[in-house]
Image (tube, rainbow, N blue to C red):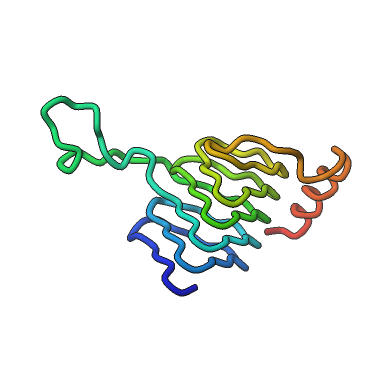
Length: 141
């Protein structure tokens, strides 16, 4: 999509992954399959700059390594979502517009807010959730 940028990082992208305009992927990410990513979504480092060392400018700070971010299959990231490095967004999860994801999101849950928190289950019953996860598994993604 137009104006979407990828840093020179370890980024893998599965099948049917759609990026909206102006996305910024600037950390290591493994994208699964069948993922919808709306516009202005950013996946950024968690430890990009040290700011807690006296007599050292943030500008000159050492960059630390982040673990890989994992976006599993059948995920939808809404407009202007920010995901911090090192989290896993589980199969079938939905993240609402404007959310800031700072921790792992379990499968088939809807999360939103700053920081993102669980809003509700994606499906009405555990049986429906298990049926959907079995369906995803059957696709051999």
